Image 1 (tube, one colour):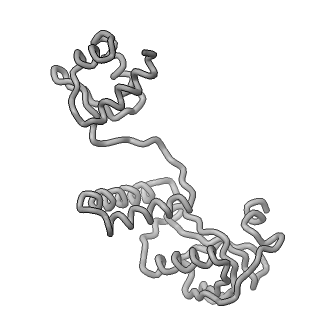
Image 2 (image 1 turned 30 degrees about the horizontal axis):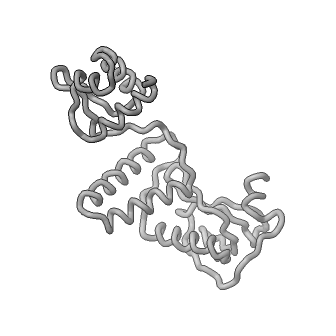
Image 3 (image 1 turned 135 degrees about the vertical axis):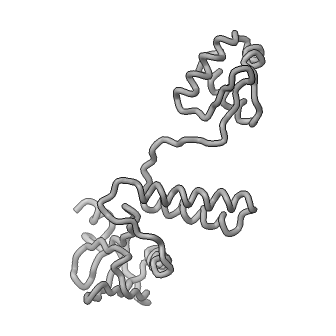
Length: 209
């Protein structure tokens, strides 16, 4: 068996949660215990969640370290939404795991490099997210107020960066694109009128202008 295949098979076997002796693994794969030692060292070097105890054997650890991930605002929103559903509707173990993962996510976002201050979620922010998300899906105009400015906008996309949610939109009042932090919105209303895509006013235009 090629080394790469054996490493994959070893990792799959260790996922059963049991402790496996090097001698037993060597016999199973038709190699020497010394080869198993080298294989396990290679797995550990690649970041695989494997732990070896002298005189006992090898087992998969309960924790897995992921490599750095770059998530878009939409991906992060789906991630949070899924965890929120599980924390409400899962069994006790799943709920605890979902809440723990949400906490780790919030900590990672707060500690990550950002020029912006962390913004904790609030009921008003969640309400804005829900309304804007729905308006994007149905192409409905919104009337928003921020400070002393009120505008009619066409919401195009929700973005998330530095724990700050922003709405990319076409501002019909200013006749220009805008990138509005949701925390700056003091009032938001969904209008019954729909909008259609027009050249120069689409998300693609925003991304390329």
